[in-house]
Amino acid sequence: MGLFQRIKQGLQKTQARLTHEIKRIISRSPRLTGESLEELEAALLGADFGTTLTLRITEAVRQAYESQGSGGANVFAVARREVEKALENNRPELVRAPDGLTVVSVVGVNGTGKTTTTAKLAHFLKERGSQSVLAACDTFRAAAIEQLKLWGQRLDVPVVAGSYNADPAAVAHDGISAALSRKADYLFVDTAGRLHTKSNLMQELQKVHRVMARKLPGAPHEVLLVVDATTGMNALTQAREFHKAVQLTGLVITKLDGTSRGGMAVAIQRELGLPIKFIGVGEQPDDLQPFDAGEYAQALFGD
Image 1 (cartoon, rainbow, N blue to C red):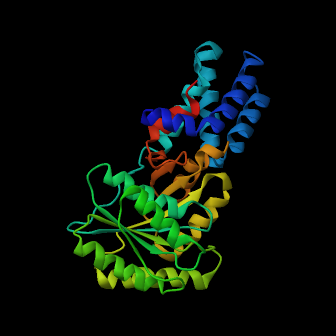
Image 2: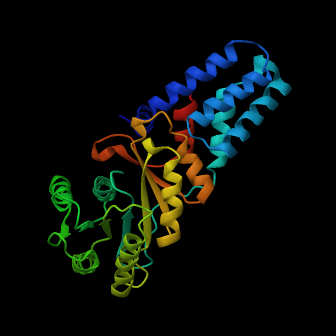
C-alpha cells in the first residue's frame, strides 16, 4: 500500500463522516442558505477543525457560491484548499544536529501511544539509512521497559534501559553515552507519560532535559509531543501545558484511524504554531508517516 493510500485509509472515519454531512447539506438545495452554512459549520466543528479554520472554510464556500453558483462551486475542493493554506508553513522534517548525535525527547500523557511511537520513529529512520538508539526513560509504568525492549528486538534497534524506579535522568544520560559510543545518528528518549496538570512530574521532565543538555550541549534537539487524536480538542490543552514546561518543537498525532475528529491536527498546529512531524494511522511500524499537508487535505476532502 502506498503512503497516500495508507493515510487515506487511516483518515477514513473522519472522511466518511464529513463526506456524508457535506453531501447531505449541499444536495438539499441548489442555493446555499444561511441554514446550510450553519450546518456546514457544525459538521466542521464536529470534526474538530476549530473555530478559526471552520469560519475560513465556510466563508470561502459562501464566496464560491456567490461567484460561481452551485454548478461551479465545489465544496470539497474549497475545503481542501483552505486546509492546505492553513498548513502551508508546516515543516515536518526532523531537526538534525549540526554535527554528530541528534537527541529526540518523546513526551506526552499516558495512553497516547508514546512508547510505540518512539520505536516507530527509530524504525522510520532505519529504513532511510540512519542508525538509532532507544532510551527507556519511562521507569515507573508497569512493563514500559519490556515494551520498548520488545520493540527494539522486533525492529533490531538497540535499547538502553535501567531498572524499575531508576532515575529517568540517569537513564537518559546513559542513553547519550551509548549512542555516542555507537556513533549513532539519533537517540530517541521514551519519557514517562505524565499528566500535564502535575507540576512535580513536569519538573522531573525538565530535569531529564537538563541532564541531557549537560551531557551533550544542545540536547534534546527535538521535543516531540505525542497526542491521541481520539481525545479531540482536549489534546490542545495538553499541548499548551507541555509547551510551557519544555518548549516543544513538534507534534506526533496518533490514532487518527480511530476517530472521526481528524480535523484536530490542523486546529492544534494553527493554535500553537508547532509543526506536525508525523501522524499515526495504524498499528504496524510503517503506519507512522511523515505529515504531508496536501495528502492530509486530500484524504479528508477527496470526493
